[in-house]
Length: 195
Image (cartoon, rainbow, N blue to C red):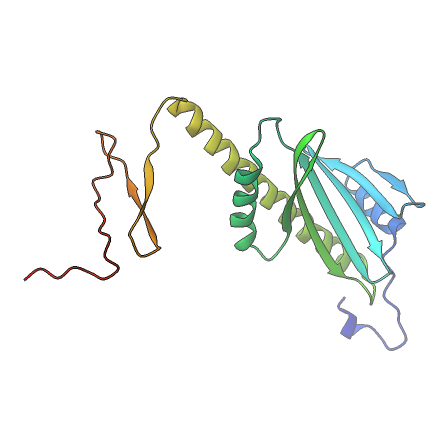
């Protein structure tokens, strides 16, 4: 029942780490609750998650996936930005440490007024599905890019080159079979008019 339909004086239950752990247990997930650090850890389908309640008002859900050792940081960041720009949640970012590049996702929800059982389930399902979908989309795009690079081979010319148009701008032109782009530029900043 929505909070505005609650009888006067009824209180919506506070979201606590123990309630979050119970919610995970109801769904068959194993977890580790650390009350001293204020978090619940669990893993689902290769993604490590952390749940936190911040100042009794914010539910923070973070997920992490360690990418293979050869992951190119600039490519991972570009793909994560592309995927993130089309979604409401989660925020996507990278972490780099001795293990390599990690792909991370984070979503926050306001829980200050508390959540009843149905609200908690709906909130958690929405956040976890959003995180899972975003991370899997990024990993799929990275895998597709890696597969296309391995199909091409290391000694193949690029499919496009960047050419200056002389005015400080640039354009991307496809490379033809002879290695040229088939595009010529002029040094004049204005269009050339031919009578």
